[in-house]
Structure formats: structure tokens, C-alpha cells
Amino acid sequence: MAIRNRRGQSNRTDYGELVEVARLYFETGATQNDIAESLKIPQARVSRLLKQAEDEDIVQHVIFPPPLRRLESLLMRELREKGVRDTRVVPRGIGASAAKNEDNLGIVTAEYLIDAILENPSDTVSVCMSCGNTLLAVVMQFTDYLRRNHDVLEELKQKTLVLYPLSLYWEPTLQFNIDSEYPSTSIYPSALVVYLAMQLMTLGCKVIAHAPQPPLDFYREFDDMDEDVQTRQVTKYSSYLEQAKSADIFLLGIGAAQHDARYGTVLDELGIDLTEEFTDDEGMAGEIGYQPFDSRGQFAHFPKLIAVTGEELADLSASDTKIIAILGGEQKIPALKALLQRGQLPFNVLVTDEAIASIFDTAPAQRW
Image (cartoon, rainbow, N blue to C red):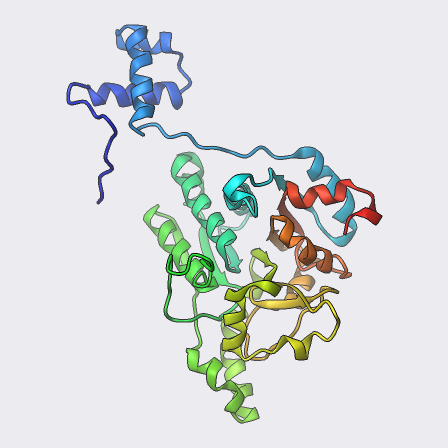
């Protein structure tokens, strides 16, 4: 196991005492005077040890973005008639996070997901996940939250989590931090399912992960197959996702992929020509789990893309199933606008940011 370098670590420090002081102060809420009295040391020493604990990263602060309640209420008023039952709005991104604050979205969605799992009365709770950087942020924040909150972790251990991918597409060579312009190319649904399962396993949770994958040749050779062979192959792989359609909770990242080169590589691999599917002038408005939709929010159907489809999600969103959609950043506004053209949205919970929610704080004629 890697050992972190502590900045300025002193051999003369009693680290047992330092850690106890930090725990009493940060975990139990004891005052510095209370700690000094209970440990029979000067209050000035308590203060110095607390500062040293922070300087050496022994104590690390966690930032929780505040919910923007007014915008959440506004969104609910606007979207309730579309079937949305709950909303969360996080602060907009600043600086390097200006395009989309994935950490804010990830933290808030992770907490919402934990509550949804624990509130489910069943001992077994199933979750179906799409893909992308924002979903990766949710997964990372989810497991970090459990590590920090032992009571919540112990409660979660009483349940069995069953994980499914939203779609079966993948490319078997995973590449990370190689092309920084398109970092989420390798964050496929099954990769996230397996990653989350492994993290939960290390925490002692009960988890079952389903990550079936057609071989890449299935996609490459599909168009050359006889029609009956195509049907048999699609039926075979579709059967793997039948149980996923009965999941208790869905996590969806909504992409604005019309100008996204990484998504273009997926379309090329699937042999999909969007110009044949979307004939209107605006073309593709966004995608969910590699499934593109047009400016009217209508999903294109591709037989070789095995997935819980957008239309199936729309049907499920009218049921008791929680379908949580996550999107942030002004570049996602056209995607949301397109989905709002639908009679039934493919989600019923929306986690978004100030940049998008603020659009609804204007007169309808000025929004888009």
C-alpha cells in the first residue's frame, strides 16, 4: 500500500496524541478547551496540533455544495407536468470547472442515490447505469461518502446491491489519460458497473454486478449477417438486459454529443450515419447511453446497439422506478430543450446546475 508523504512531519510529534485531538475536535465536536481538559494538556498545544493535522493532510476537509432551493422549487413548478418528481440544483462551475462542475453534480447525485437505496424497503436494490465522466464522478463520490460515514455504510451493508449497465456497447481496450481532450471514451457502462462493484466489495458490501458484453466483432460484422442471424444475435444479447429493465433506480448522464468527437468514434464503430436518421435541420440534440435523440426528443433506434432504450426509459419514468438524470453546463441546454418537447420524459428526477436551472428563471419567450 502506498504511504503518503506528510509535509513537514516531525519525529518529535506524538502522532497518537495528534490523531486523538483531531478526532475529538472534528468528529465529536468537542471544543479545544474540552479537549485540553480531558487530555490534560494546554489549550495552546491543542490548537497547535489541530493546525499541524491540517498542514500534514491528516485532516482533510470535504466540500459539500449547498442546494439551491429557490431554483429547485422553480424547476419543480416548471417540470412537474412533465413527470419530474424531484430536482436538485448545484452551484455553477467556475474557472477550470466552468463548462461543467462534475464534482458538484457527483456529490449531490451520490447523496441522492444513497438515500434512494436506503429508503427502498427491499433487502435487494438494483441500479442500472449509463456512462461518462459525470457518472464516474457520481461513483467516486458515492464510495467516498460511504468511507466517511460509517453508520451509513453499515446500513448499506444490510442490503444487496445489483448493478447493471444501461447499454452493452464497449471497446475492449480501455485508455485513460492518453487523449486528454476526450477522456471519457473509455468510461463505458460496464466499466463503471465493474469499478463500482469492486469499490463496494472493498468496503464489505454485498454486491452483484452484471457486465455482459458482445464481442466487438458483433458490431463490426453485424451488417454482413443474414437477417435471421442478426435477429438471433440481437435476441441473445438483449436477453442480458431484460432484468436491467426492472431495476429500482436508473442513473443517466445526458450528453450533448453532436459536436463530440469521442461520440463520433462510437457512431463509426456502430456504423451509424445520423444523417439518415435525423432529417431535420437541427439534427442530433443529445444522447443517453449512446442513444441519440433529435431536436424533438425522439430517439433513433439502431438494432445493433443493445440497450434499455430511451423509449423504455420514458415508459418506466411513469412508474415507481426512480430514473435520475444528471446534466450540467450551458452546452447541455439544447439537449434538455429537446427532451422537453416530449410528452413523457425519459427521467423523473433531475440533478442539474445553476447554469441550466437559471434558464427557467426567465420568461418562457426568452429561455431558448
